[in-house]
Length: 241
Image (cartoon, rainbow, N blue to C red; front, side):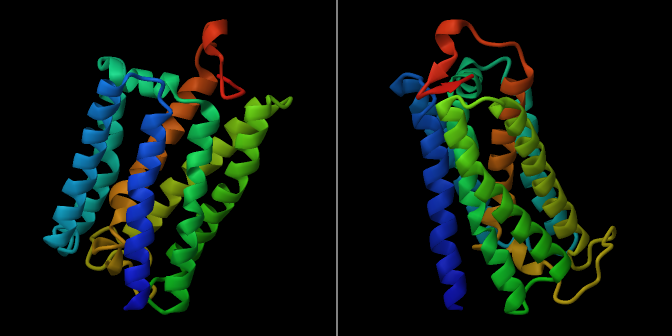
């Protein structure tokens, strides 16, 4: 379908451009940025190859594989952040406004709504995930601008937005798994099911973009709830860290 081609183009673009923006804004030297780029590229390539081979479309196993694709990158980041300087610097050195602004890419959640309108996704999943992503994306832009300008109260607004963004992703994953065909723990039996999310290009959402955005939320929580940074490190591009 033409819409699948459109989805393949814009999802691939987002999956390449947004990690690149994150890496280029990390304030690290070129060698470390290259290592991060190789890591992100390898992650995206592996997920894409597995999806092309049909690994995420297998009954039961495919749904479990999607869950692992979401969870394993988070476990890796949490486990390596304190031990790998490059990853630690990525979390601490990237301006908060950039971490927030990256979530504007979630405006592509409109595709869930369109897939529902085409009769290709169930309402419970598509409308909740799609409208939630669009709301988070819409709020990300003014929040990032407020952070860059250092407006009063931006920190508590950022915390509230970050909690909302995290909840949206967790809810979307839960509803997606709960609507999967043949999954033993399925609890949503609307038709159609979420089977198309296991195939390309739509697998790029749960297989790459969801964990990527969850990682940005983890970084933001760590910065907002952690100790304040030294004065000389607090501002970059006009945003206090």
